Image (tube, rainbow, N blue to C red; front, side, top):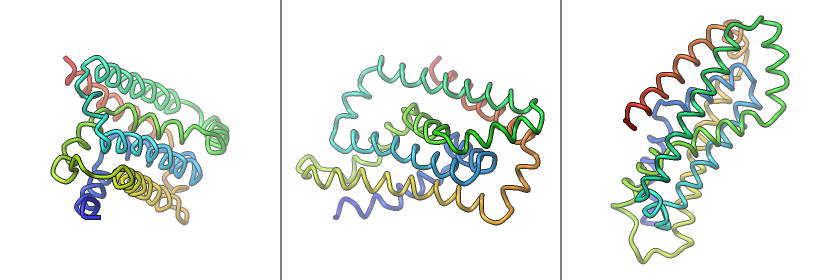
Length: 205
């Protein structure tokens, strides 16, 4: 329990920090509806939880020590961001009727979950961040159930925050008003994904 308490505010602040994860959750909530937004949050939480567990049991140290593994993850993240940029850019120039038909299909499918999981799992910065915040509180003699509880707590906080964002954005007619400008929203999202991809490329080279 002593190892859990200090990590609560850190997990909360980490989840609330702006980045591609928040951008994708916001966009999917507004355009795809509440179901897709919540699915994105669940997928992101599971991806985060996997990293949280690996870091807690110490396996992440071996992964982070491998430059090949980290490089593969980084290029995977860049590829995902570029794909999202292309997808959003294509939608930005599509007729409004096409938006409505596509959003109806996406909201009832697994698109949000998959995007949420990949945007989290293909982000090695999460792994590095977890290793940094774990170092002051995790000791070598901690039992596996405690380490598992830490990972589950991190996953619950991450998933809960993004689900709350999705629910807030879809409350009342808030999403409907923003959805009226879906083309502009998708155009902005395309540019944002390109910026994040560019930053990752810059860090690699």
